[in-house]
Amino acid sequence: MINLCLSLADSSAAVLEEKMARYAGQVPYIEARLDYLSEPIIPAVPDGQGTDFIATCRPVREGGRYQGEEQARLQLLEKASRSGFTWVDLEHDVEEAPSFPAETRILRSQHCFDHFPEDLPALFEGLQQAGGDLFKMALSIRTTRELTFLLKWVESLDSRTPFIVLGMEDLGQPSRLLGAFLGNFWTYVAEDEHSKVAPGQLTLEQADQRYQLPRWKSPPAIYGVLGNPVAHSLSPRIHNQLFQYHQLEKVYLPFLLDDAEIWLDHVKQSSLPFSGFSVTLPFKTDVVKWVDHRGSPVDSINTLVKRDAAWEGLNSDYDGFLKALQSRLSLKGKTALVLGNGGVAHTVVKALMDQGVEVTVVGRNPEKAARFSQLYDCPHILFSDLPVSAQICVNTTPIGQHPDTQASPLKKDQMEFDVVYDLVYSPENTRLLDLARSQGAEIISGMEMFVEQAALQFEAWTGLSADREMVREMIRGNS
Image 1 (cartoon, helix red, strand yellow):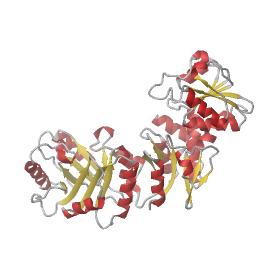
Image 2: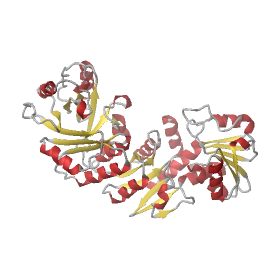
Image 3: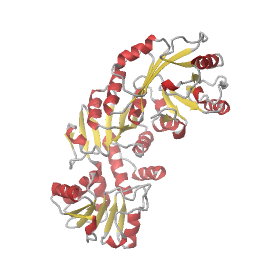
Image 4: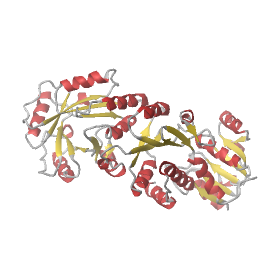
């Protein structure tokens, strides 16, 4: 079972004490951050709730808030150890530890904020030599290369040595999730998004409900979304709920990356059971040359599936986009304007042309629009050339998505279309669709494509059919 350690911090000892009592028994470990207190008062430890309490008074030199004298800090930790705290967090550079009770367990910790260490094994060996019952290293991660180096090293650690190794910052967050499956003694979590005491920390709800970390006795099949950014992606919520609904031994995680190929090369070498990924911006074209087999009709991939030892690349955007259109009209011989020439526009233009649609691409940058249209041998115009009449208009730009929901890529007098399809799905009813409806056009929300492509991904990974209405309600409930 994966253990969670809830980090609690407050300037008031009374509030900290109340929180400790509230969460006692809900998680196996609770860390009390004494360095956040405005006064050096030890909070009372609740009696016998099945939770061990850790006293941490992190000095500024190790990324904490304690600015007082070192001797006074150590005395505070000693007092905590005699007041019911099972564990004391002691930094790597503390050479003369206080006289703790014999039963007190020592967590030796080291934090590297300004650089990634050149010799990680030597640093960890030095931490072990400082003495303790558990050894923690927290390292700032600024690149995917550093992340994969860290994870590969963690896989090599001797399981007989109790450790916690994690990467900080947003790019380091995957190590907090995967570290749970690689032997970390516990995984740190925060009460909520507003009470995190370390960059990249998970919330209790995310760890317990969304990823169900305490449930796993051994690593489940691992899926996830590869992108930059991914913080606001709905995919982890959707796919984890689907996995849980179908009672599958699978988990879906967010992977913020700056280099997809470095990450995927690591995946091929890792001992963890990576089984599939969603691929979002800006990596949809980058992964094409990485896959062993390509099942995508375009040079863009949004779904990776591991089949035996090989990786297949698919594009559920292609079929997801077409389904909503084909349910309303026959496409052969129709004309269409495609607004934008970014990543998803490649899929849209290819899908339309494959169905016999005459496509014109609309862009803002003349050179970029020209290069894009040359790839598909179709005409292009600029937004300044509008209005132009066509039967179908598809918006592939992000204009109108949350939070700028009153924006529209087109004006009311530029709506000379029978059907307007806005790929923005949050909000479901965009300003563009409002304007199109007022001009008598049939409208299609990006929600339809998003639901379908997510369902197709789930089916590619599991072989099971996904309830589209269930997916739709998940999206509406989380948007």
